[in-house]
Picture 1 (cartoon, rainbow, N blue to C red):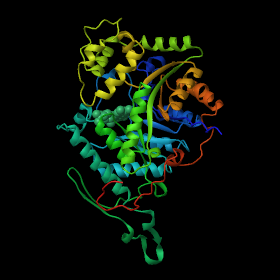
Picture 2 (tube, protein in one colour):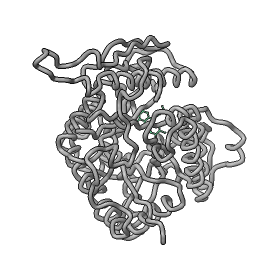
Picture 3 (spheres, protein in one colour):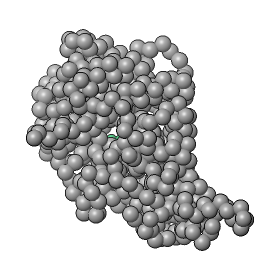
Picture 4 (tube, protein in one colour):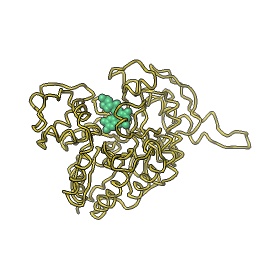
Length: 451
Ligand SMILES: Cc1cc2nc3c(=O)[nH]c(=O)nc-3n(C[C@H](O)[C@H](O)[C@H](O)COP(=O)(O)O)c2cc1C
């Protein structure tokens, strides 16, 4: 008997105007992209109708910087925006990017669990560990942490959030008017954390998650230390993977690390990003891309290429391939290595010219695919069937029209092939993802240490 084919799943990267940096130039001008709720409601409903697993809001906690003068970036707070979308949708997961380096665990625990209750079990926290200048300037932070300290601090932060989530079990809410007791303090699990970076003490004033389950945790990072951190805490990892072999080795390694932490490898999902540009024919898709690419200024693209390669690009011949021998003789910074390796391996496999690399999604870094819905469906199936990915974070060129095309094209095609669901099976995000139950407050110590 043949094994059932693995189902394909999508998470939508909900961006202002779309993934392509010139997307906004193809749309009627409006200030709504910075915060307009109706625009985001329309996209969220479309994604839910297409049976996406989740909407994901990437975010930078920080002040406006120069690239944002050239294209709109959504500026609204992800948790607040997703709380509004929770009331406009019924099944789709809601993934809010929030840092584990800045802020305090109590505020984070309260906000994410509130989102989980508002959405009835559909919240996820995407834990990020960046320390960009825009964040430090906005928050008045002068120090810059080395990588080891950064992740030690993030571990302590997440462990504290987790402990706070477990501090008020549902069973402690006895609601017994006859004895004048709403919450039985004997059944709470007060935390007392005096860590290297954070202190917090007491009981969270709401239960940590809907029906006693922990909100889903996502994580995004690429360094070795980040993989260890994600494999310990996260239910799902966002990752940039442009080359199947590298995607497979990334996935195998994080699942091995998860198993070393006593976890079921299937409880750690890995989502490579995918940037799709569609057309009714391949030529039409290429033309759609060219029309968008032609609206980008070249100078910022050269600067972006230089940042990815960590290499002076001013002397490069735009119509030649990259100087691979020279590039491979150098090492990149720890934070940039994985991104650079992916980029170079992809460029080399496609014999890409420097000029074409300028238009290779430098700002997003997701793998690009340009073609018909059938070609995109073939590519996605191939990645899944060769074990290079289980599901994908989909980036749409121009929103919302591109998402409509993706739904009626790629999703419909995969449904016809029996590879994509037509209905949600459950109500909560954790259940729809097929993850094991994760009860809060079960077998926890009060020190907030680990899972
Ligand atoms: C696919 C991916 C998505 C990310 N999304 C965000 C984001 O939305 N906001 C953010 O502040 N950082 C984001 N990051 C940055 C990471 O959280 C992390 O700070 C960065 O990768 C550097 O850490 P590392 O060198 O340990 O990987 C993302 C990273 C990756 C790989």
